[in-house]
Length: 487
Image (cartoon, rainbow, N blue to C red; front, side):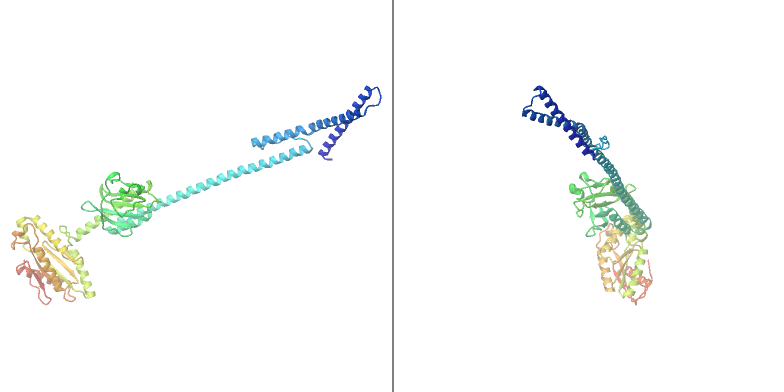
């Protein structure tokens, strides 16, 4: 028999006994009170009511003692666990009946909840660990990207350094600077501006522009809060300070902008200008790196400019800036080879200043130098870019005229003579001819005539012009023998 059935049986038995006892007591008391005579019928109904009431009370007492206290304890335990979220404490043992079974089932539920709670805590901890691992992975990836960027930047600096020591071509050095630095720094535009002799700025190299601005002159950034004064100028948002890029119309009015002086030995030789789009503004690290790039670029540019200057000194006349005899000979050899290959005509002019010694003796070498500079300017102004004007002696100059025949060469010579005769130089009026003048000999190449023969004929024609009275042009003919050269 189950515990519940046993409890129900006890309740029924207790109610039956209590009811019978109550009815018997009531009837016995009534019988004695009436002296043993028969009782009225209502006494029997009263006895029945008393039996039912006594049975009910007895059943209630039994139920209370058997179930009520334990059910109350169980309910209070349930409420306490829910309110405090404490699922570790168990309900005490409550016997083998249904209440006890309910208590044990509740304890099993608590045990399951405790296990689930432990699993939840473990899961949360594992999730936190995973999240931290992901955060560390993201941080590691970011650090790796930064490291790769730094390595790229260092590699770029090394390449610029290598280029500055291995290449002496200024144009190549500038090209390496802009084509390598521009993409590495995620620039939208990059330019190297070089200082000119008059203190201005000229665009030496550019990257990212729709049309190449190389060779153009621009103003130096100055004025207002964005003045550049021997330091880096960085504008994170150009749209808020458009005046910062006002010196150069082709720079965008959005994004960020930086201008970094290129300085060598405290001498500013140029400017590094860079822009970035709005979504990738310049930061402090980029600005510092730009300073390092500018410092390395200064060394590269200075070395290239120095080598170029040395080459110019080796191949150009220092006073007039014209090619010297060494460079003239190289160009004449190339012109002769080109003439042989394609059958083009080639002519040569030999010029000599008339009575140059008299000008120097009368007005000093400063006047003579000024006259040479003015003469060089006239010759360069009235000849083509393909022509070569060279100073090969003190007052002697040669002009190489590719793809030019004898008649055209004679016309060029006469035009130059007239321009020079009209030239106003100090001391010209005191010259023996009353003006500053030159004598010119013209020689056009005959077929595949050798270099020495061509030069000899031009030189001979020059001295024939000088013997003929100076300030004139004489054209040499191939069949004419070269006369002996006189002083």
